[in-house]
Length: 227
Ligand code: TYD
Image 1 (cartoon, rainbow, N blue to C red):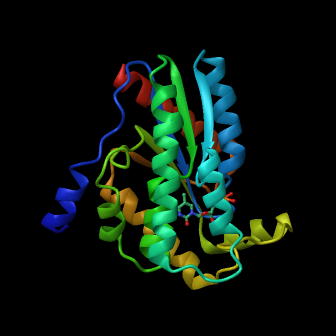
Image 2: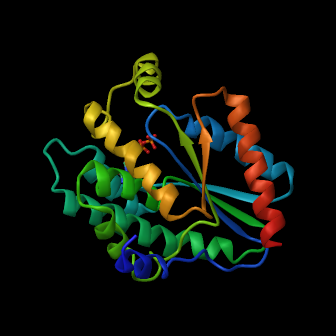
């Protein structure tokens, strides 16, 4: 790891609100994020946490406009423009919602995608490089990272099989080919390497109940560690 990457990494930290936690879910299409997020929300509510699920990009009226601008674009967007759009949506969501809600003790904010998506999709997929992504996140509130990231890892074949089963129209990123998906996987692996304490990798090739047990294990570890 270069000295520069180490310096960039040193600026990231989770928000410090006693009794509240910030968690994100990551993975390529077909990893099973949505199902696991719903189950995790229910489970955490049963433990008496107040749980909010937010999605990236989006979650604010400004962010939803950016979401449309990116995901419904008919013409290719320059990778740099794309990265900044995602970061704009993120900064606004942190400011307008996340930080305010986390100030209420006993809150858990779950993000459906966060910085590791930008590392995977724009850093590796679009070829901007991981350093470029880390550099764009050096100003507050983008320096905030989750306490825990649940990375549900699947391979290319599983992603294809599950996407084909779903039969819903493909959006902007889902139309990309195998090379792009392999880069996403490489990007997530790199994130896992760069943030070993935060990013918990789960074998998403296994069945839903196995994945959920792993999630519960990681969440309990977090709650006990931070308390
Ligand atoms: P979405 O429909 O939410 O996809 P999914 O259900 O797979 O989460 O669309 C979000 C898309 O945006 C998804 O393909 C990943 C991509 N993305 C990036 O490229 N960079 C980012 O920083 C984020 C947050 C998402």
